[in-house]
Amino acid sequence: MSFISELMVKIWEPESLKYKKLREEYDNLSDGDFTARVSAYFDGKDADESVYMTALNSCGCPYWNQNGILSGCSFCDFFSKHFEGFVLLGALKDRNRERYEALIIDRFYISRAKEPNINMLEHITGFDSLNTDEISAKLHEELLGEESSFFKDGFTVLSCETRATSVTPQRVRSWKKNVKGRLRVECGAEVHNEWLRNHWINKGITDCDLSRAARILREERCLFACDVIIGIPGLSERQSIALFPHAFRFCVDLGAMQVITSPLLRKGVNLQSAISEKLGQDSELTDIGIGGNGPIGIHVFSVLLAVCSAVKKYPEDASKLKFAGGHFDMYCRHVKELYTDGEEARVVNIALEGLCAFSRTGKTDQLDIAYEQINSSRCFADFCDRLHSQHGLDQIQETMRIVAEKMAKVYWPADWKEKLHEFGEELKGFSL
Ligand code: SF4
Image: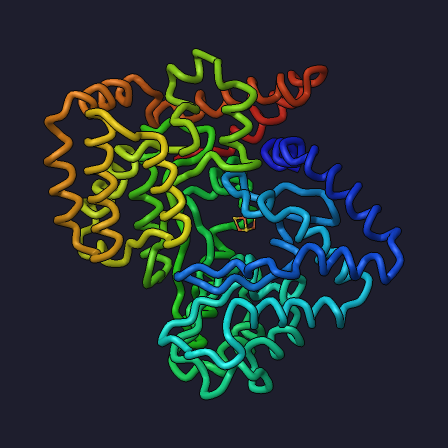
């Protein structure tokens, strides 16, 4: 197990214990009491539908929950907000598979009317949609197959998200069966560097997994899109800005027709939150550019600089870059809550508006206009001064070693030297 995999298990440990306790409680209930518990939780609860997508209920991402041991990608927490629901669904699935699937289908029809208008593009997704551990072939057929009452004339474009390792010809064929136009599949690449992706972001996805997924989708005449994060947890903003254009290029070269990006949020249980919570007062980390920014994981100015840099370097592909709808809305809400008044709020808002306008229209001149407007402001100049004093890409190994040491001392107070040694050995395999 890599250092980051073990660290993420540690960071999630209190939730894993909570999960275990709740599961035991549910498993010990009689059928009647358990059913009442499920009803009490789900009845009257709105399904999680946004204007951008219809989220399928499930037991959560199988990569996050491995037999009750929770961890997952180091920037991700889609789970603590609806924690009890995931535990209940896991218990129901093991107790009675048929009732579980019936509930998932019910929840789907609550989020969409029984016979809704089907949009030209339907983004209907789980976390790892093509993984049968999350959405079984039978459940998929009942939800979106020919027998489904939701399905009438087929979808023009059906879109879903999945891990690259779950893309197989067989799963793709079964998902694309009812699609008149194209099936679009979105896979997380996050960064271009395989070592960073797996030894720091804990993605568990190789370059080979991504190119294999891209090839299968191409051969099956499906559309392929990639997710990329702006702001790597535990790296400086300066490093994150510098890495972003490479990630964008990497995804375009893989054949992605869209590169969907999300600014890092310090939300729930993720590495960025753990660093802020445990080491928020650490002046060495602040000096090198780690942490800070309150609930947002990366400053708006950094997001603007990263996006500007990517579209300037690769103008011919700029239109492929999009923000992830719901996630970006959440980021914007946090930014607005953080900067409410004064000169800094005014300037931050200009940057945010520029990013929103680019996201809406795909026009890069909106980014240029925002950049020109903020460039003469005092607060942007101060921000750039701070940015230049942060660790740059040439110090990235040192940055990770510093963060790893501090986190090892927090999570393994007795064995931190051993853990750090193991990380040092892994780090020998890193190159940019
Ligand atoms: S980012 Fe995706 S693959 Fe990683 S834990 Fe979250 S949902 Fe699962």
